[in-house]
Length: 77
Image 1 (tube, rainbow, N blue to C red):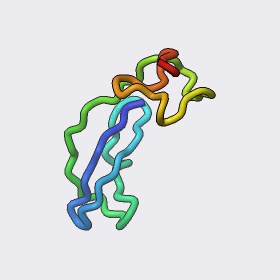
Image 2: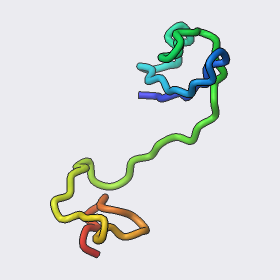
Image 3: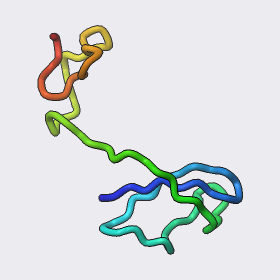
Image 4: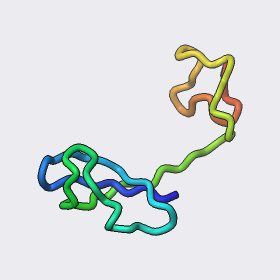
């Protein structure tokens, strides 16, 4: 599901909208002031890598390598 980032031109609130399929501008409403005046922001796409299981029983902040975290079975390295 595509995520687009916006900035309200009335209250300067930055927010994102999840769109089903393509971007529909009628759905872009500031959650803070309910304005429909916005500026679309450039954002990098989020890419998830590794296992689909986000839980890790053995991970602590001490065991997470600075180069990758728990994804893909890297716990305890």
